[in-house]
Length: 293
Length: 241
Image (cartoon, rainbow over all chains, first blue to last red; front, top):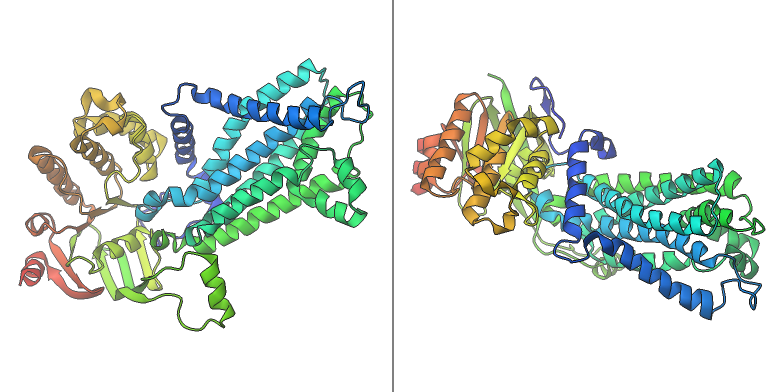
């Protein structure tokens, strides 16, 4: 809703896509604040739930996978991953961010249907606000992760910190792009949000969150492994491992080949492409939101 | 006087029966797109309306005649299937007061959120906040969550935010029945004041006596077609006959 000079006639209802968000910064801020306030309303633990849920999730996975299935390195199990707890948690926080961002963004248009039906405003605000809110919820988990890393002897260099930023950026852009795509599709076909739920379940296991990438390379051929590697979420998770887990180990663990020279730019490229396609689809579909909701 | 709103030859079709699953759509595609997925009807048919700056126009008609649909096209919420809509200056809809309100937020938070939704900047909301609260007569309850408000308080606050957005063109959809009688009178005075200040008003209401007091021009719609466009008294007389 940009302020146009009263001198000209303009066509209402034609937004400029994501570019409009710059003018709606104030509204975006308020929408994010609303979501944060409303999220844990009426609960005793409040924002603590943002710690408790990933905490429990982490413990369950750690005990089941690290201890029972033997992924953690111990004197009796020298084949395992050292500091598996850090390895696991650094992947989980990123996947949680992705799941929450995409899951909420995909539902955001339908959930805000009452508003979209009545008042014109840049509708991209809703998926973007969802991703933003997930980013805010990601922060406390990041704090816990860093605390865990420090205890495990974390000593990162600047390049490793940049890798974390790159990983977060790739996953955030991908979630925004897919959120625009599925959020718009959800207006027409409510199957869309179920598809997203399924996709998110697959995404958790299609990236080396619970296991090591080397296990995948052993089973898959070079070609299939390249496909596996091209998943931007996989790249994000590997960058997070490099940033948070790798500096806590003795440095003997292998970093996926060409992670920085090839896969990071590829991941960023795919994420940007998805964002572009998501925006394109969104703009084609948004003209009929008001009557379909 | 220049035109504030130019609606030229717009048509809009609505779908009566929706297909809501991918399965049905795929079956339809597999059958070679035979038949229509859905039935359609015309909500608006070749509607052309020009409103000059400062005019006060009432859209009249029975239920389902397309009044609200036309208003949604002017606000940009809907896009026409054919024809064009153009507006001059900022358009704000007082369309169903409180659409942007969240019951779990306080009155204060809702004033900011709703103000932003209606296109106000942070500065504007800050500047007008006291006026908004004063006009709404909410007083000390401004920091209470709006779910605890009475329906009258809720409407008063929402209306108050809306009239303080200060756009060039006001779209008002069936919201004039706000609160008790004194507050209703206050709202009508406020709307008349806006009209005197040269704001363009487009009002949809079934309260014919009320719109004849506020508006000078009446447009009568019937089944999505403009039946009459002229003085409000003739339009009301025609609708009543």
